[in-house]
Image (cartoon, rainbow, N blue to C red; front, side):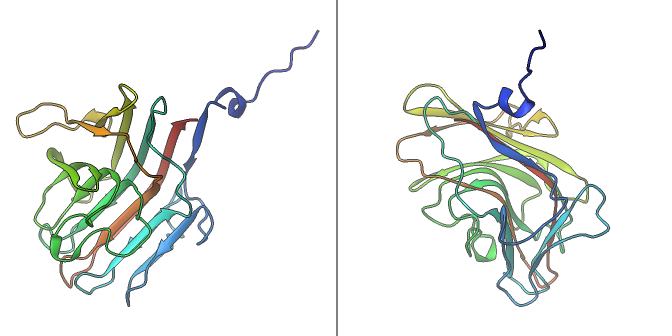
Length: 236
């Protein structure tokens, strides 16, 4: 008797999510682009082998652009571990000038997730991921809820022209709390004293999140964030 084998998708049916090489890009579809400022743009790179999208601010201070899933597909909750990973690259337009967020947030696809003049994340945001603000040379590990923003400066360099793989993992530890860990190029991001960054967040009232990335110019030099792939996975 021949046995019918389950497809890989069915074997992983307890998980929801996607792995997107961004080999083709239409907005809105899976992704919606934010590029409302004059000169800002979100566009596929026709010469980008493997599928690359360029998220660009244009050469105006505080211009911004973002790429976010069209719907809020992922919500931290008890018994629902969550992982988000992206491969990104950027070079600061001027010295340490770029403002960047990569990960998951509830307002990732709207204006001013990254505040003007390097002032950090918008107040009241729910977010998990990596951030870099004007003046930063390394990634910050961020776990944010309204009134409770955790932002730990790590040792992993941010930008500089090298491709980096950034991963954030949320693991519930009981019905009310979850531990969030951060990895750069498959290595734990370490804090100023060399310890792996681990942030604890409350799950109560955590809202659904979009996945993606945002960039804001810190000078008139402009900034461009390249995105090679984005992957998100969560237990149903």
